[in-house]
Length: 42
Length: 388
Image (tube, rainbow over all chains, first blue to last red; front, side):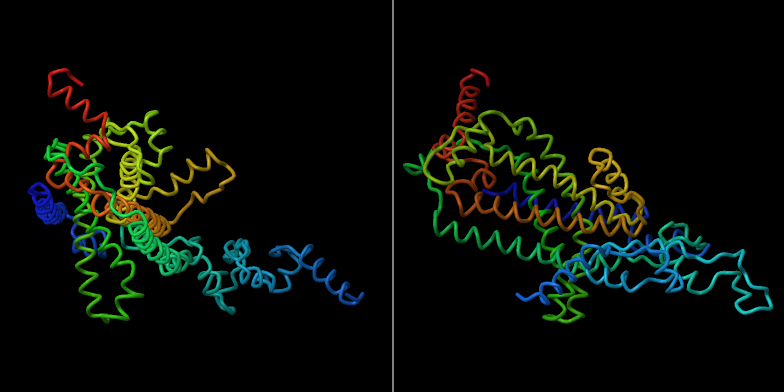
């Protein structure tokens, strides 16, 4: 009946985790932005 | 009123009339050794603008350096006060090992203004705005009741939205609701959650909220683009919308003004979602990547070029950019929350049969004829091979 709605919600959750891992892989994780060479002494 | 009272009133009146809001009189300034005057302090207490140039530009003079053997000689003509003023107004050249320009800003006065607006005005707007619209809709529901299908449902249905349209809508809706909830949890954490649940609980809630907020935002932005592409052609305003609006959309009374796929009310929601959604996304990106996407100085420059009287500040520190991005993000998001609560009401409990459009995609034919008669005619013409 409302299958599309639940599929969209599931996709939203999965895509959020996907975004997290993709951004982390690209160096935009919070650990990277807060402790990378851009903020460490160099 | 006797003459003495009248005279006293006149003196007071003249004092306020001829006394400037703040004084830049060099004589008075000299009497304080170049520091602020009593009038500066009084003006600031009244919330009036105070020209800070007298101390922003009072940064010492190396040419006046005392001999190395003299008092303050090792400071090279710049006292500690001069140095701290320079840091406060970002007039001192700071060298840091960090690559970021933002790290060179050690003190920034505007931070307090931002903090106070976040704890005050923005929270009040969010609380009274979202609470007010809910209260208003409850009152409206008890006054107007549920909008029924005239004559009852026909039993026959027509496909209102295709699966891809409903998918895009629910991705946008689901992500927006989560963004709204987590955004409000972050906004009210200190003033509401900590007093009720304590610091430890708020820490867990805030950590969860910021993770969800930062990552689900991508779904919101992607589905916003999807929605725009799918529905923009159906949401171009036309004369029919004026008639629909003039009749109040049938919300008050029993009229059923003509409409195609989207009526004027839905078009307003569509454009509000697209425009405010794009704006909140841009400010969100600015917050997601701190100091990487400053946009307010350039925006203010454009506004000033169109309306010179605005006189907006166009030289903003990196931190000011972030503070403005945050305030704008919260204000726009709250406006969207208020509008979307009304949208949810009319699409669910407010109108019989409305939820089916996005639920199953199949709406009752009689409902469709009453609310989107021209669209039904177009669909029936297509089905019979007549084209749109």
